[in-house]
Amino acid sequence: MAQYSSKPEMRFTMALSHEELAKLADTSRETVTEALGKFQKEKLIESREQV
Image 1 (cartoon, one colour):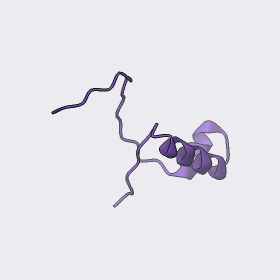
Image 2: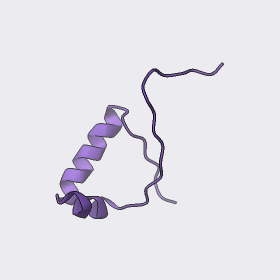
Image 3: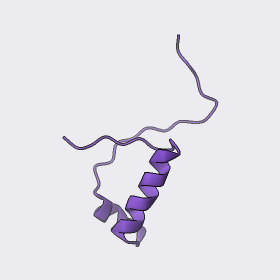
């Protein structure tokens, strides 16, 4: 049985490194890494390792 969430969901694929994201956001790679880790813990984002 399918489950539906009341939260809006958006899916997209981005093939950017932490360094590239940092440059786009005008911040450090370390800050991007920390933020993405926090977002993953809070289940706000999912990521897959690049194969």
